[in-house]
Each structure stands twice: as structure tokens, then as C-alpha cells.
Length: 186
Length: 387
Image (tube, rainbow over all chains, first blue to last red; front, side, top):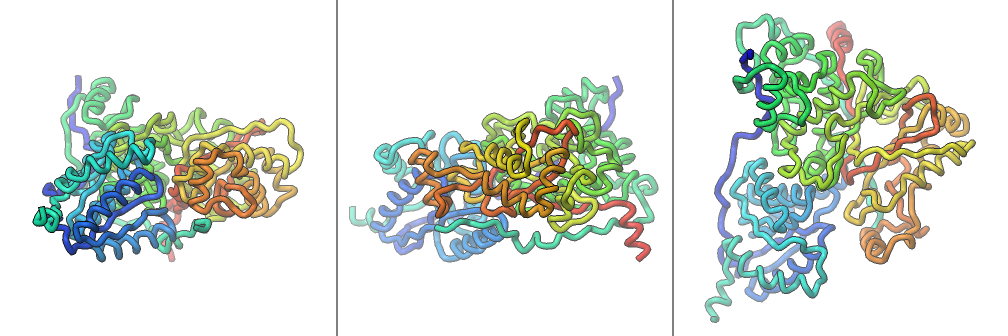
């Protein structure tokens, strides 16, 4: 049996940021930005729920919704997103709940994290491993990913809101965030 | 919200033919190692290498040709490219070099003469507007389909007649497979890993590489209409192929009505409320094209007719789907939802056997936009040098 050398057909980036990036810390007085998309109403409902809790704690909350990412529309979207992340202190990026939308969620999260923002991507359980894999391929294996149950978007609002409620403390932990003012009062 | 129109990004406005390099020291004439890829020791018979490649995650399950130094260097030396030339950046911000293209082409069994076509194909799907990032990752079965224009069709014997979308013997399967291996090994697409494709597709083995039968077309070649005359390739992220049979129609408008209405099935991504816009690609057979061309010598009229019929009455959809499309502003004042934003977004080419009767529809994945890139040739390099 002849043995010889063959050339490796694969390529992969060599660099990696394995740490999670900065903690969000106390959210009081900070501007928290939620990245939404056009596909997942469940993520709209949960982000609105979490946003209200952030506001109650003294944070300012803003939203940005992703749209088409190609052509002239894509370039407009890119400019908008850059302006968005320059305007916030903390990024919460979702929702990784399908193939391409996990791709874009992670990509946008990496952009925010690379800009130095405390950043957390939100994924549903079925796409958790996938989100970590493409975060690693994107050069940030340590990207924070908070995981919501799956299936999620198929559920009614009355069933989704309790899930958001139940995950609030967990997402704070993933973000490395605290609601300091509320904690002091308690 | 209003209808979102497809407008090319500024960066893709003017595809430029990349001049071929000239060199006085080629892979065979140099002492230095031109190839930067890591070497692996492996048994070189087909069965053993196939098992080795599968274990490494390089393969698609079919036999692979071992990419030895000799094979890769021979492939390169038949062409006029430096191996470290970067053709495009693929998902994960990974540069795709000529060397990686050649190694995968060797494994796929593609001939050395296909390198410039392969480079143009990779450049097309690496364009940000092709959105390979989404194409790679999606739950959809999408894969690139390529339409080749210009004399290179004949030089490489790219099929454009009987069986051109798959099954006809020739180099298309190997060239298409090389692209698919590059998508796996360089762009990182693995089903269940970085690709969440629910079902996949037989097209994810060798893709689609077809020529346009320009000589049978009443209209200018597809690539020329998109601003690239001569040798060129157009990529389209397709969900597969959908056949349309029409044994009944006589007139251009009747044929196009049948094709357009058939294109418009509500479960395709073109009608998804999750997709803000998408293109359509349709292949007309030469017999049908001749009939259509007699009545409609302007391709714009063909596109407009297909566009008009490739639509559905919004009332046909249930409330949830209708509401989501309405929220996107995609229900027009006439109460209809259109597969593509404008007639110009319905791309048409001529191909297929002379038995006629059938058209082929290609549905979009979503906002992945078709790309047309020039295919360089040694001849054009010689002309550049002479100039």
C-alpha cells in the first residue's frame, strides 16, 4: 500500500479571543441595546419584558432591528448597526433560532464584542452548540451565549412571557450584569 | 412599511476582470516550496485515502483523488496563478487562496483547465451580497447554481443542452463538486455543525453548473445583460430545481403565464414573511424561448410577464402568514404578493434539450443576491500583455 503526503484542503482562521469580554456590571445609568430581527416574535416579547426590568433598574434601553443584509439595503443596515453599537454601553443580541439567523446573530454579537462592548448573544437550545461553533469560527470562542428553551417561537405569548421571566436572573448572570440600585434597596 | 427593492451595493457595481499574473518562475521551475498547506501522511489508494479523508472531515462520501504535491503542482503549472493569491474571504473571515481551490479541485476530480472558472465561481459566492454567511448556516437546503456564459462554455464543454442541470457526462459534476468541497473545507459548511440544513439536497454534492445556450437564445446572454460580456459565470443561491411541464400553450404569454404561476407556490422562500426580498431564476428551453422571443424580442417584456404571474392573491394565505407579509409591506395595492420585488429581479436564461416542453424554476434562499463575475482566460492575459 503506497503511503505519501497529501495537502490539507481546509482553512480556518488562527486567531481566537477565548475570554468572554467585559462584564456588563451595574446597568444603572447605562444604555442597553437590544438587537432584534424580523423573524421571531417570541424574541420581541422577551426583549420587551427584559427591557422593562432594565428600565426599572435605571438603565436606558434602545432597540435595533436587523433587516436584509445584502445589496444597498444591506449596506444601509451595516451603517445603522455600526451607529447603534457606538451609541450603547451593553449589547444583547438575538435571536439565534434558525440557521442563518444564528449566523447573523453571532456575527452581529462578535461585531459588538470586538468594539469592546459587554455583549451577550441569545440562542435557543437547539442552536446553542451551533452558536458556539460559529463564534469560534468568527474568532471569539468565548462569546457569551444565554440559552432559552426550544421550541420557543411556536408558543403563544402567554406561554413565552413566563419563560422570559424565568430566564431574567440567568441572562443577568451571563451578561455579568447587576441591577445595583434594586439590590441596594433590597 | 414599503416594498423593499433590490439595489446593488456600491461595492458590486463594477465587476473588473482581474488581470492574470505574469511570472518567470513557476511551481515547476522554483526550488522554494510554493505550497503553504500542511502535509498529512496517508495511504494513497482510493479506498484508504477516502477513509482517511472522511476521518479528517474533508469528504462528501464519494471517492476522492488524493491531493498529492505532484497532482497539485501539475494542476497549478497548467495555469497562470500564484497559489497564495486570495480569491475571496469566506465565512469565518477565512481567506480562500488559489492553493486551497486547487487542492479541493484535485480531490473532486476537476480538470486543470477549469481553474479560472472555479476562481470566478468562488469569487462570486464570496461577494458579500451573495450572503454565503447565511447560505452556509441556514436550515434551508440552499446551494449555489452557476450559469456559465461565453466561449469558455465550449472550451470546457459545459453542458447547456440535454441534461444540463445534472446527469449529463462531463466536467460539470467535478467542477460543481469542487465548489461544494471548498464550501465544506474552507467556508466550513458541515451539516449538523455549521450548517443547520434540515433536509439538505442532492445538489449539495455537485451543485449545478450549466451553460446558457446563447446560440439558441433570442436575447443577449444572461451575464452580458448583467454587465459582464464574454466569459462569465452567474451564481444563484437556489433551493433546488422545480420542473414546469407545458404541453398545451402556443403563445409567449401562455407559456410565461404557466411558468410564472408555477413558480409562485406559497411555501417557497420567495413568499416567506421572514424574507424581505428575493430574486427568481428561470430557465426556458430553446424551443419555448424561440416562440417567446418571436413575440417578445425584448427580455424586459419576458421578465415583466413572468414577474406578473409569479405572484399570489394575499387572500389565498391564512391570516398568520398574511399578517406577517403585510407587516413587511409586501402586500401590494392590488392585493397580491410578488415573488420578486421588481421584474428586473426575475432572471431568465436559455438552456435545455431540444425536446422542449419543460421549464426549470430556481427559488431563492432569501436575500442572497445573484452575482456575475468574469472568467479570466490565458487569451485575455495575452491581450493585456500586448496592450
